[in-house]
Image 1 (spheres, rainbow, N blue to C red):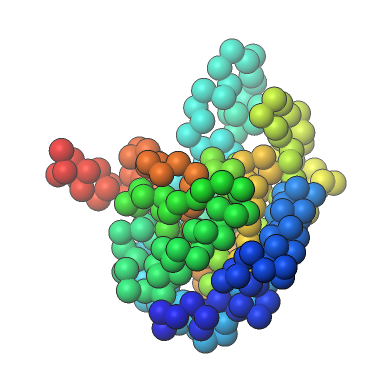
Image 2: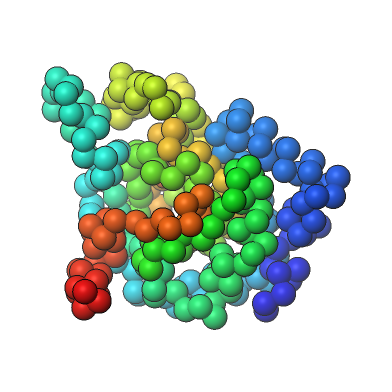
Length: 276
Ligand SMILES: [Fe+2]
């Protein structure tokens, strides 16, 4: 199934014809939602047949997932964010939240899998570029460009910010219960980290927390760099499988090796040193 008309639901989402009036309206709707809510959901983005192939292929790879760190900062590798600040142990930069998921690295996802084909398709890259208003590229990092996150019973992800301005995910399989995506839109900006508000969310204040009800087969576009977000605990035996499609505006972008080793395992360090 390589013909994208059998993969993407073009009746709902005309990403194959973005310059038509329908296509332009569609793009404007996405941009408006991103501006107003920091997120945009496209339910049933892939067809039912494609979804079943995507979920089946992903399930075959779940044993390759790497657990990675279990207590993680909201700011990941932004180690210097607290520099120059007088911070106590409860300050957001010093706190860690529970992360319980396995990540399948890019190099473990076969090129012939439908997910790889969809991710690398010119149509998807062009579509994301049009949403961003600039040229977009597939991230060329060998481990971090396309990933599958696997959450089993008890799986969750801590409150955090993403490094990328726009995160594109495709939910391949919903869990029985839980695994809800929660976020606080635009809680920080380039000018203001708004640590007081972040601290309140980490302390459990729910007033500004919103939920995105992701359904399997739905594509999500999310401005995760400015919006604090988490995934609630998964219950039941059905795995939550989510693909993370890393697009970038920098054609030479590569993630850092330290992050790849932490999230994809020590084999990455061995692979990298063998290439020196
Ligand atoms: Fe995230």
